[in-house]
Amino acid sequence: MSLLTSIYTLWIITVILCDNALKLVVTLSVMQLIHNICLLSRTLCRIPWKCFSTATEFKVCQLPKATAQLSCINYSEDVRARNVINKAYDEKHLAGLNSATNLQFNQKNKEHNVLKTPLLYASLSKWYLTWFVVMTTDAGFCLAPVTFDHSTFFFATIGTALCSCAANTLNQIAEVPYDAQMDRTKGRPLVKAVISPVHAFLFSVFSGTTGALCLYYGTNTVTTILGVSNILLYAGIYTSLKRKHWFNTWVGAVVGAIPPVMGWTAATGSLDAGALIFSGILYAWQFPHFYALAWRRRGDYARGSYHMLPLSHPIATKYVVVSHSALLWALCMAAPLTGVTSLGFVGLSIPLNFWLTLKSLKFYRQTNSNSAHHLYKCSLYYILLISLALIVDRKVLTKINLEKYDNILLA
Image (cartoon, rainbow, N blue to C red; front, side, top):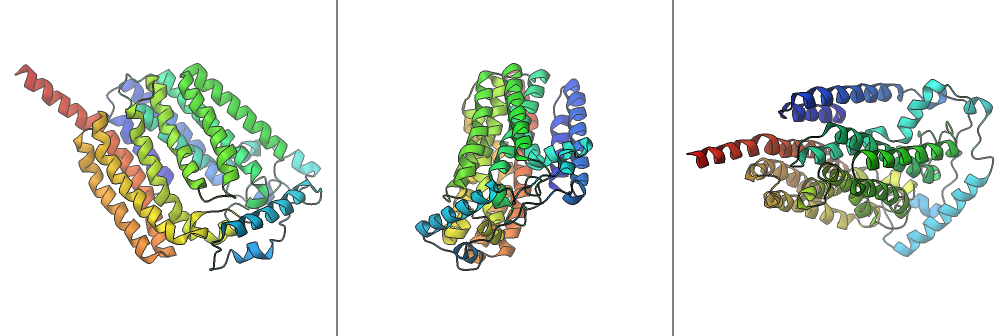
């Protein structure tokens, strides 16, 4: 079962557990529409980019020798040396960007088929990541202890999606020369010269502005500030920090933890302890999840000159993964103290945390691509199942406990 299908199944169950029939119909219709669009985009995006245009591709500049060595087994531990490498790398590629020979757009590229434009926008928006951001926002909204408001839910969903589109597009604009070096990203539309940077920038401005207006009009000021701040944090601070310091992952984890808070504030209009339950879990989860992925793609990140912890401090990476897996235990145990969940959630979370910790310890002992792969797969299922546990506790177990308590009082 793919991640997309798993997320969709999770939300089908979420809606079924709710007792509002209108909410069931409306949400299922919206989710089905979005799901179909995403499946269509995923299928069409598999078509080679060359069929969209015959534009000249971005010419990959030769890496400095010191940078090329980073893709080997012996990674440099010297931060100063790496900064020198990054500086030389940036100067070389920024100079290449300014030359007309590296990035050219012919007349056919400028007049590309209008029907293909939505696919380009979907790629610029990293639609799979935007989908996940929207789902976590909606989870925060549904966990809030307030009456479900369909209008607010709609504007929060659309506004968050548009803000995510803007942030991801700005990220790709800033990383064109570096994406060209990596196998995972060298097929992106800006790298392949399928769309111009100006066009992409205008799309990001439109998406960000429209998203902020949707949040302001349909939700409240707090949610709007969080949405705009996340764009600046991701596109401004996190993007530039990726090539300068390994601390970038901590900043990126904050970016990933804000959407559930946005969902909560959109529903309640306030920021309190309940908003930090799912947000905190999502923050800690990102470290075993991302570092498992980054470990397997160390060579790719080295070629792109990204300063990731598995590159410069492989031993520290193991400790970070294990410590944040342990932090998930603490967060799940402390969740009932906020009043949002009950002790039932603690019971549901124990086997999930045990599973993730087991895979983290295996990665700590072996520290190879195989253990990283198993940890990565485990982390994907973990976030889906822990989300489902939160919803089951909120919609089923808590209601049962309240009914029992009322019956005791009446007796």
